[in-house]
Image: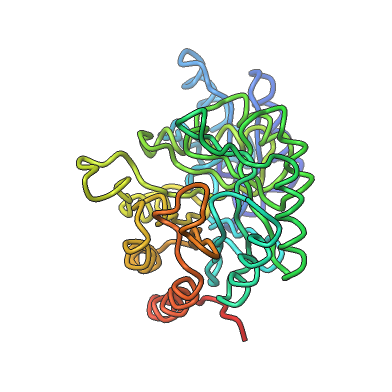
Length: 346
């Protein structure tokens, strides 16, 4: 439910409406944007009191009209937040005119590897380094990451090249530790509905990159974002990374680019795309990355390894350094054509 106040309604009138909402055991929140104050109710409103509450609020001084919200998510909805959210982390901007360009290896492996990766990301015009220190792998015998030591290696490599960092956190108990080492927490696709993890990550107040699960609907994706926002997170970025394909012969996943304009229509949160996991093959990453920018994505997160043949995870989809540099140049041209811009190295 959203209560729109009349133009010129003062703080006394607004506070009275908020207090009336609280008297029903509900939580009011003042909404940004527009020429008038609006108040949203983020709590679930019992069916038996919904109409009574609406009628009560409608006749209060300073209230213009009351609107029922149709979406199951509130804080992530554009109904509650009409203005696009723009998030800045270091030199990386999500949701503004400038695209966020993020790249790096799937896994943090060695100091030399991460230094070389950071150098390439910087040379390509990227502003954020990605790398996994904790890896959710299908096989228990596969490389699981270097843990805390991997986070330190990535942090040092990024700092040496003036980059921000993003890395996945898998366990609620690791949120505080990972947040100490990186600028942005990543909730991976397999953890999108790990609700204790979402609660802890949201409560940390740290920026969060939330990836869509391979079988998740749009509503399920945004409800996962709602968990983060409802627990206090303010800087949440959505990431489309592909859904289960009909035919695994040719691709690892089907990159659902339909999701980009849909999400931007119904949510105010920034949306970026991962064409690496979205396709699973390095040769398919550039065309899908360009398509993502063309359809309105606010940025890209791309896997690149200094030597993909030596990569300990996701070698097939990792770009070689020259390919990443060329891709980001092409991205800049597409961005300009659709009224955006991509920061390239001088």
